[in-house]
Amino acid sequence: MANFSVRARAVDMLGRQQIAGIPTAFHELFKNAHDAYARRVEVDYFRADRELMLRDNGDGMSLVDFEGKWLTLGTESKVDANRKDDAAQKEGPRGLKLRKILGEKGIGRLAIAAIGPVVLVMTRCDPDVVKEDKLTVALVHWGLFETPGVELSAIDIPIISLPGGTLPGAEEVKSLIDSVEACIDLLLPRQLRQGMALKVEDAERLKRREASTRERKRKFSSDLNRVLDLIERGEPAEKAHGLKGELFERLSNLDSADDEDAASRLLEIEREFVSRLEAIEGQSTLTRPRGLAPSPPVEAAWKAYEQAAGNIRATVFEPVRAAITHAISDYKVERGLGVERQKRAMDALEREKSESLSEVRRLRREAEQALTLVQAALRVPARMRDFTRSARGAKRVTVRDVLGDLRPLSSGERDPADALHVSRTHHEITLKRLAVIPQNGGGRDSLPPELQLACHKNRDAGDFCDVYGRMRWDDVAPTLTTGCTDVTRGRYAHPRDNRAITLREAARLQTFPDQYRFAGNRSQIAEQIGNAVPFEMIRRLIGGLRQTFPCP
Image (cartoon, rainbow, N blue to C red):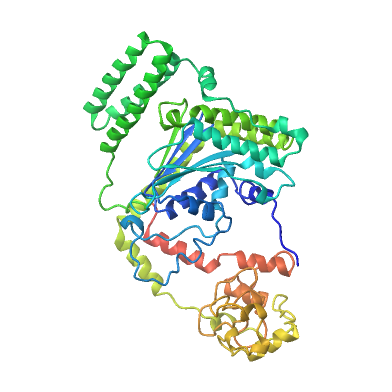
C-alpha cells in the first residue's frame, strides 16, 4: 500500500501562488470575517513601515478550534453550512441575523501569504459562551513553506495561550520567534543554519535604535492635530477641542522630563489618546438615511497612515515586530533562494505604491456612481415591478421549440447538411444505459444495478443526479457547460434519441443563430458554447432595462 505525502510547498502553492493579488487576498479574509458573524472589520495600513493590521469583532476561536480548523487545510467545518436540516434556526450567534456562509473549501486563510511574509494571529472566543476565557496567539512564517524538500508535517507553528482581555507583550512574541528559529534549525542543513537563522534583538536595543522621544512626540502631536481638526468639523466639536487642548498641554510638559521618564509618559498619553478619541468618534458616527438600502451585515473601514501614530501597535509588540521585519529580509536574502523573485515583487510593490492613490480615487468615483444608480433605482420601485412583470409575461421557450425541427440522429451519425449536427460515437455500455433511461426527462435513477457506475453506487441519490439524464421536450433546457455534449457531465442526453446532444443543438439552446460561425476544433467549439451567455437573454435584458430605466 502507498499513501500521498504532502510537501510544505503545497501550502505556498494553494495560498500565495494561487491568489491573483492583494485585493483577492483581502476578499478572502473579509469573507472569513463575514462567516464569523463580525459586525465590523477594520484594516490599518502603515505605509512607511509596510505593515498591515486586520481586525474584526466576529466569533473567535479557542485553542482547539485554531488547531483543528485554522491550521487544518480543507477542513469540513463549513461544508453544507448553507444546507442545514434545522429549518427552525432563525438567528446566528449573539442574536444576529442568519447569514449565508461564503467559504467552504477551507483554504481562504492561506491568502494572508499574498499580503505579507509573516502573520501574528490573535483570536479569542466570546467570554460569555466559553468556560475558560483565553486569547490564542500564533506566529506563522510563510517563508518556511517556500523551502523545497520539506515535509508539511515537519513545520511547527508556535502557539501560546494568554488570559482573555490581555495582549501579548515583547516577551511572549519573542518566545514565538524563538520557536520559529528552532524550527529553522531542525529543517536546514548545518552549513546553512548560521546564514538562515533569524537575528532577533531584544526590545531595549530596538528602542534605542528608534527615533528619540522628542521626535516621536513631534510626530504624535502632528497626527493628533490633523485628526482632531477633522473631527472638529463635525460633531461634537466642543469635546474634540477640549481633548486637543488638554493633551497638547500634557505633551508640552514632557520637554522638562528626562528621556527615560518622557518615553514612559508618552506611551501613557498615546494609550489614553487612542481610547478617548475612539469614544469621540463613536459619538459622531453618521446614521443612514431612511428609505435607502439596508446596512450591510459587516461594516468595513480602511485606514492608511503615512507615519506610525499612537495606536495599539505601539503598545503591544512594535519593537519585536520591527525585529521580525528585519529578520525576514535577512532570511530571504541570505538563503539564496527566490532572490530574483523577491526583487521583482519589491519592484511591483513600489509601482503599486505610486499608483495606489489614483487607483483609490478611481474606485471611489466608480463606487459613488454605482451608489447613485442604485439609489435612483430604489426610488422607483414601481418601475422595477413593471420590469419584473414584463419578464414574467414573456413566452416560455421549450426544448421542443428549439430542437424539434432538427434531423433525428443515432450514435455516431451526422447530418450531411449541417457540419455541427453530428452525434458523438458512444461506447456500448453508454448506449445500453441510454436505452434503459426513459425518454423525455428520465435520469440515472432508472438504471438497474448492473448498469450503474461504481461511483454512483457509493454516493447519495442526490449527488450528481443529472448525469446521464435526458432533457424534457416541454421544459426549458438545463444550464449548459463546456461539457454539454457529454452525457457524463450533466443532463445532456437528447429527449428522444439515445445519444448526447450535438454541437448544433447546444448552440441553438444558447440562442446562437444557425449562420453563426465558430472557430477551432469540436472541443474548442463546445467551450465557446458552454461559456457563452445566451444572446437572446442579453438582448431582452438590456431592452427591458432601457425601457424601465431610461438613460437621462
